[in-house]
Image (cartoon, rainbow, N blue to C red; front, top):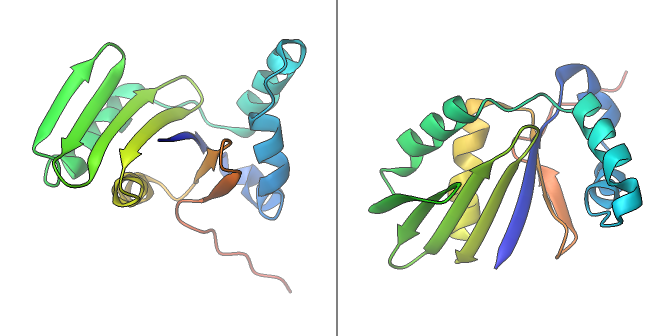
Length: 142
């Protein structure tokens, strides 16, 4: 099982975050209660709020072609595929929580759908210390 936290970075901060993804991963994976409010304030500063209905609609439209079973379970949209496995998605104020159980193809399906919507998403898997842009930003240096 892989759990991703996916954030929509504001355009004006993308070049600042680029190259500092690991530092942001450390901040996101901080579990101490004392720092939680500070971390959420910093993330709300760097990230765009996520419009739940729009994201859910885009994901539904893109993923319904690949996943025969789609249902709502509590706060999660659940996508099931007999070979790939299951994908649960919950849209929060400043991030998307995705739980993938099965093949890594689930991750690719999700990331491809989100990258079609916007090029400013970055995903973190704190448990496996993985992070990356869903659609890498173009960074020119002069």
